[in-house]
Length: 107
Length: 125
Image (cartoon, rainbow over the protein chains, first blue to last red):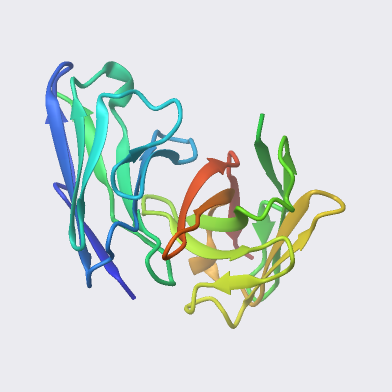
């Protein structure tokens, strides 16, 4: 199975901050990488697909980058509604796997 | 608008079979750019992909669950289903159904763009 790791596991930030979350895949997965946001008690919401493509309706402050093994999700100007847990997911090979998540909390 | 809704028992006894159905509305299940999938999330953990089904019945399953899982599609009712046999307490989770959108190219890319609200299934005697 492809192993997905994320760092940090949690972070504290203030409204307006720029936040970057890292996801690492082993072995490489080209750009078969998606990012989701999940709030407590809710289903995950797709933010980014194919590493850098913004899903319809997602604010442009979210951006994704990377390829092969190293990926980032950046939030440029954190908003109150962005406090949540973020997961990366690979769909390069079966089984499709998710990272362990990064919880973004209010400082 | 696209909507998915899970239904099924919230409590299943150990060794029995977990059965869930996902009703799909607002989109045709026979559109060949979509697969239909099940994902579960144990309390406090990351999501785990269980498997996906194409409208023609073609399936892909997570190897760790393959011996116990069946996913099927009924396009006449616009729904798809999950069966998980011989459940244990480790199968306790919120179960989500979701649409897997595909991007065709040199390779096929998938992403889950619409999800149901999820249903908690507890395995307990």
